[in-house]
Image (cartoon, rainbow, N blue to C red; front, top):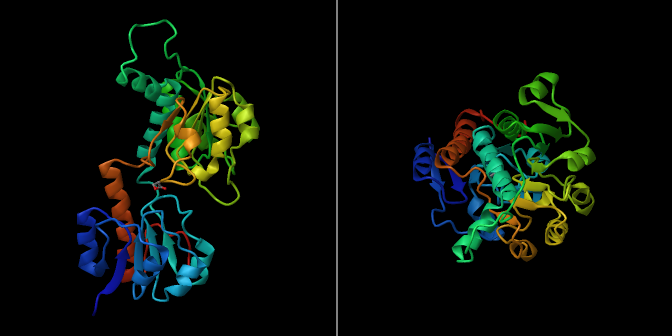
Length: 323
Ligand code: DGY
């Protein structure tokens, strides 16, 4: 029987392409060109599956224009690039890559929290630019992490992994807010207390955003929420850029209304709001939350498993819709 054809939309580990090649005719993109949408749609003609990495918008217009498409496998846990109801209506399976990146992404959340609270980027830049001439008692004083209050907005798998690090590793008091409250068992496991969103912003010394991005929570952190924060507080975003009103955040940071921010995701990424890059009290990283080789390999292999399983045996490991 002739092999089905798939498109791998971005560069990926060669060994994952090799695996896919055992089952499919694979059109790949190892040059990692960002195809304009019309070219992406053109390349999808005759393809039964597509391997996406989170930046490719799959919506009603695209699935209508690609009648052979049966599955879109995202190499990301976040799937805000998918219009899942439109895909379901068109009979296209959507899959993501959960679980395999939980601990790595939680590590990154904590990395940003610590770097922001202890002013690592700002003090390193000071040293590298030759400005350090003497030790001084109040030089780059930051905020304590141990014993402080950690506020987590979004208490899914990654949120709970961040909570464990705070509660068990740093003796932090953990408060959280989530669409639905955790079961008492899960709350006890991560030693976290459920509070309203307002209380979270008031009580926390360090806030971490880990919720999925949807149209409903666009700019869920804006000027009103930031105004509730303590002047010594920090905020970290490892979810999606659209969760924060970046202009409001930059204004608060510039005015010293909060201590700092650590951001791994941005609303217009890879473009970054110049109001943020102009500031010293913000740690900025280029969407590297899951960026370790073993984790990225696991994410890519899970996306490949979904393509292979669904197109050869009608079984995907991590489907987002049922058809
Ligand atoms: C995810 O998996 O959603 C990460 O943000 C990487 O894209």
